Image 1 (cartoon, helix red, strand yellow):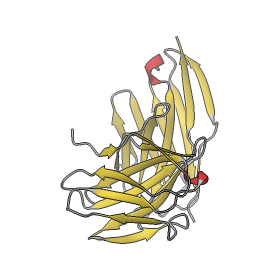
Image 2 (spheres, rainbow over the protein chains, first blue to last red):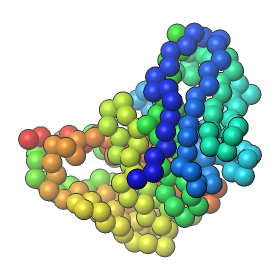
Image 3 (tube, rainbow over the protein chains, first blue to last red):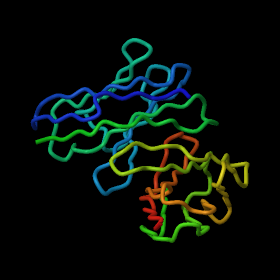
Length: 113
Length: 111
């Protein structure tokens, strides 16, 4: 069964450093997303991406965040200057059409120290 | 703004019991509703997807129902097993396509 692949599985970074989280969505999917889950809290929406542009973003997704689909297969989330409160599990997801369910990756656990 | 609630937060049952996990949502204008399983420290595994026009979906020992008018969905697990122990999340998708999650129900099935 097709999978969404995320790398790395765990990243530790110092506060103020830039991080890039990488995702390879399912190849024929059209909609791409990033969600995050702070320990003990709900999974929350960050951003959706369709047709090579952001279609919606949450209040969390401020100027420190950006997304890119540089080569038609990878989908990246960049955090420019990490804060302690950015520590969370970050999930990438994709879906073929709006009628289909989401497929999530296994997540990247980001720890900011 | 959509809000999704799952109560109780945790549930412990003996092996073999049939059980129902509840999910409620405030905005009935959903596109579909999806149930996920999450093992500790792991990703989200999709269990069942119910379109807004459907009433229920079944996969093996799992059955999910949807009642849009009352803003409720249930996940029924038949003959529970210790391997079913995990956190079960429901999430509603609106026309804008983003998912709104509940906080999940942590299920423990005792041998």
